[in-house]
Length: 389
Image (cartoon, rainbow, N blue to C red; front, side, top):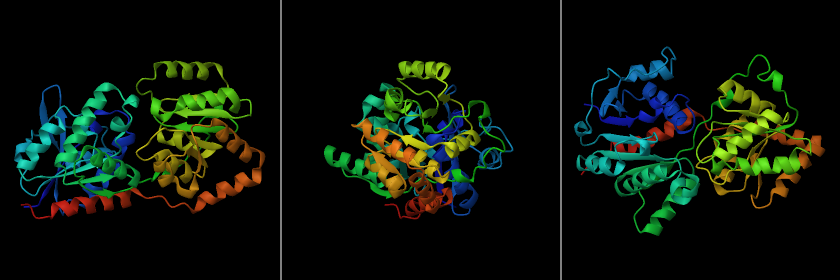
């Protein structure tokens, strides 16, 4: 009998708009389920909170929905029930989705799996709720602490998107006096450049000249207020327009009121809260610069998405963004906004310098989702075929 890999996809199936972590889950699983079923049996799990039931979702249903797009949603209502007690020695539980949001806490599940000699692999996207709890709501922080604590105690291996995140985890382990699980770094894929632009201008009625673009969920950590302040203080007067793309997050009621007011009254500001991939692609392509003033990130996918579209990026000078953007991005310190303004003006006033910067982006080779899946599979395989005690 093949070894089995259990993956909880509850969060993916619950969201109506696939982005962020759920985008990673979708892209990795599409490839893994298409390529690896000869090597292992995959158990896709969905927890029905209304009935307190765990269902095993059909792999074929998943692929029809997310790969083939022949169905609008995965049918889990009539999927057979499943119990974690049925997982056996040598099986692998792969925590790829945002499982800290699950009703079943990791501190309860992981010890059970270990007693059954099930291997545990956890994908850690970041540890923001631990390092910066002020940027998260209280419930998320409590759930994440439970998940991360269980991960450090029971996981056989962890996977991080960047070396920076893995080092954060290692420093945390040293600080609390626990051994860090063995870790792999697997960069996230970016096939965003394959998305075809719209045949016509995506936003002809809102065409803006020389606009700065910020893409990401509206939340305090992303630092939209920093860019708004700078826009109203100096950037608008210097001839820049500003575009925000992202859904409202948490703790942003006042910020959202400010954004919506600007969107209604300022002809040089645009906000899109429900942009599809084609529109986002067009906005990236036409932007003067993508600006990414985040306080902290687990990865920083907008940097890659922008570079793939041939649009320069200027990002906050933090280690994880330098790791992702390398020499293809420009950086500025968050404690001195004037540096950002001067940097943007430098490229506005020197078209030849700006052209050379854009041309340099053509040599960038992003990691593909196929490469990410291959490296992720290597991490799984190291556990799948490892002898259990």
